[in-house]
Length: 268
Image (cartoon, rainbow, N blue to C red; front, top):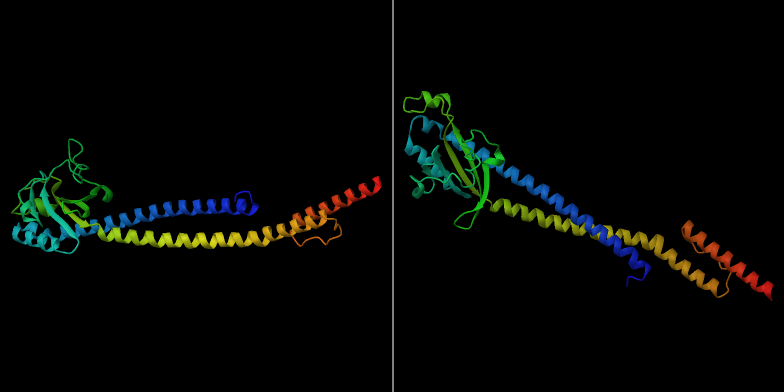
């Protein structure tokens, strides 16, 4: 099969175009996936900060019942896998899961280690470092965000609070949302990109094959037919309609055939 000129022309083009489209697909999907994850984390970070602001009034008035009610209502929303508030020492004060209250989080766990890597916990982290992705005990893939609750002027001056002005962080809000919507979106993007890449391959290879047939294969077939006629003695055959190079080749073949015929006649 590979001995024919057609196969040798089409197959390398097919391999090259397929490889190029595959590489572009992988790179483009990686960029789109990264953008989608970043947007999801940004959205979740904004949500976490909104929760912190929503609990501000209850915190300033030390209204623990209202705080638990806010956390519980948010935790009951679809897609919220967990939400908890714990203090600097990791003691869980409020949680969607009542059984977690009073327990201590592991500071070496994902989401905590970024702040507690050194001897002193970090006070500020970027959005991406605040995020972590894992599978919970229920087998659900979760994207979780940890947002610090800072000690502001209203906090350490409130009559019911005892935080010193030098204490930068009062606690941390930890909220985790199901990654299923993100996974479904990425799967849909991947499917559409695959369909698009297949369409690009079909159109590109079809166009290349049509151009090769029109400007290479058909003229080459005509040149082969012409040379066969010349070899049989039809020297005065009209030159085939082809590109300049192939027509020049046919003209040279005709000249060579005439020279050979002339030499044979001279010997006779």
